[in-house]
Image (cartoon, rainbow, N blue to C red):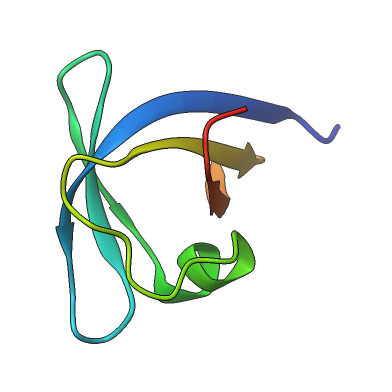
Length: 67
């Protein structure tokens, strides 16, 4: 069964390889792969920017601007 979820977070660090580390609202730091950052339309997210993480079957597939 496919399960999709969205979570709110704040960009903590943007990495040279295009990936990012975000701080979820529950206080956990999470690494976001470069493909998920690009899929959300980001070129280089800045620390402090709010984002919405889209997960599919537990895997972050997109990091988008807040909805």
